[in-house]
Image: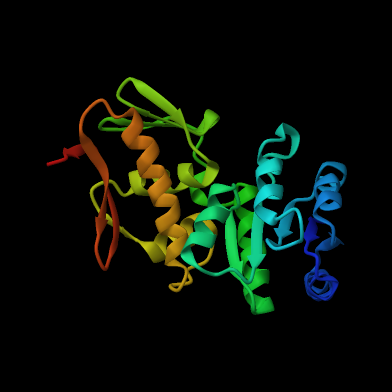
Length: 238
């Protein structure tokens, strides 16, 4: 049974989530204290964390960063659940290392769907995570063992989500991949209203690739109104 840890200073929200997730078979524990919540991550080793942002002196961004910096728990999937819904808030959440971001007020069915999708992904059930062999196209080589990308002779580490996004784009090299398709392949759902999630991670991915590119080439194109396209040999920037 998958154990889920909820960290939110609102006990009513914790109880609501706990009851509804337990009804569909998850084991849930919670803490209304972020410091205690972090300790529980280490102690209980949950399969997934649902994390609030505004919790007094210690906010959720700080908790997420601390989790990502602790080797034994660094890969635990995190859904940030918060009333802060502006793009800059989402950017800060993703920069702190969270995997998904859901804005309050939320529908419990949507939370269930995102929990399932994230657990599926972390359990390596999606196609993009079944890739075990090195994948090379043009200038780009993906190395699954270390979640790394190599551009010609330079290499950098990616987050699991960045790796999955790049893998999906490489599998469709030269063709447009819609944001909806990326959400479905990487996160396991296709909410057309959650395009900010894709934009943030694509920005990070592009930045990492650009830093190691020996050529002034751009590899990921935005197709406005459509999606994204990877060109494995790049296009020289004008």
